[in-house]
Image (cartoon, rainbow over all chains, first blue to last red; front, side, top):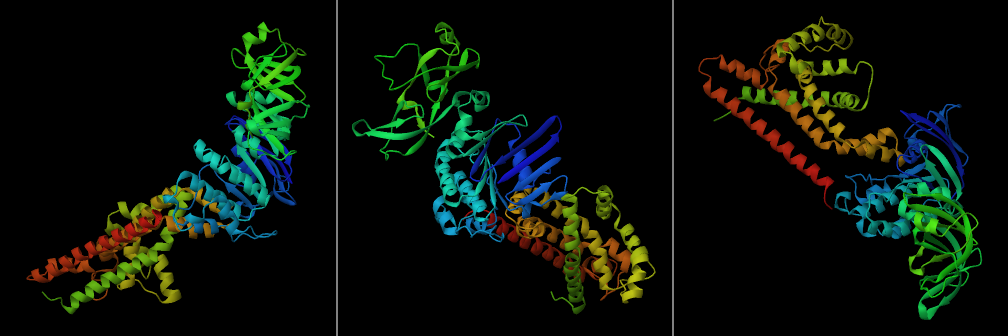
Length: 356
Length: 230
């Protein structure tokens, strides 16, 4: 669906990447300065690559060898920027309608449905200056979606918002994604956003692709950690609902390895798949089978890999039927005599597990 | 205090010249302002210098240049005269040409500052929504520089009403043909016992200035209000 190869030299910085991505939502993830926004700009036609090609579906938008360079306005790529970039002299409705002249192959995306999902129906007559930050960004997302793009690029669309606004808008993006199924490149340095939205993950650092693949696969690989950013590093676990303990308001899930996983939550139908995130710093390790502990989630396994983390820290990858990242102190690591292959019990407090 | 028909003729001619001056210079000024604000091209410095020259040259010198180039034997004037039978010498069209050249740099400066103040990111966003660069200019850039357009028009209008040196050098001071307000006042100053007529035209000049400033302030406030609030 997306077939991209880009090379660009900017001063000392070299960007050289090639990747393909299926339809659905592909996340481009990496620390700031990795070159994420450059890639977005080159795909959209806002910046010419030195070399390479950009192909979306059947359409070749850029090819340095064939001297093809379709201008921005004919690339049919909707763009949601970090800042809202709403037109100050148009009303919300005027902004939403601005891109509707775009020709389309598939059916038109219905105006009312998008407005309903984003909850901006009451704002249509207002000017951007009178909107709050969250409202503006919702309108900006609606404007890009309503331009009937063949592809959507979202360049850190939530980075200018506070946590409260972010958690309001994230589910809306999720809903737009499932309702209209527009091929989307989502750029972010927030793990929370990516684990929740992305089907495919591209991991970028210093102008190079470090890994590409299914989001859950990549997340469980230890080498993600230095990029995954300090306290938020962790593992994604795909589990299915096996049972519900109504009196304790507790979901019981089957993990890929067969172990049981407990977490607080509302009742769900048996068999419902859930994607959970377990932070590495929430995982404790025991050499013996634990007893007399409040911790409910106990997985038997072994140390699969380890590396030194931040000063005084050790990053471990455990195999407990599924890969699980753990972060412990260097002191514990040494005193417990842990090494590759050491059988261990991994302990995770149910209250720390979050739905991704 | 009554205004004589001759004085009314002077006032109407001045207004006609000022309106034509702005009408003729506006589109070229917009083009030049956009080029200077948004494009890098070979010879940009030369264009900048040429555009701004009338601000720094004595108006008499500008008038002399106009006489040499636009006169009936001038390079451009001669061609206009032969091809189209248009003569700028000693008539109101010549006054428009003189005031337009003198007002041009002021209009360009106002427009250029306005265009430079427009957030280019908005234009980029409009392109990603599938509109052509021309449509983006008409629907985004132009409305956003509306206050600058007003400022440019007002400045150009005021410059045309007040222009003296280039006009009198290029097309002389002919009552009913090229005699605008400042030229008429200049004549009255040299006429004995014309105090009352002189004062009438001075008062008219002041009133016109007030009206122009008030109108542009009002329009500027209206266009500002369009950007804010509900």
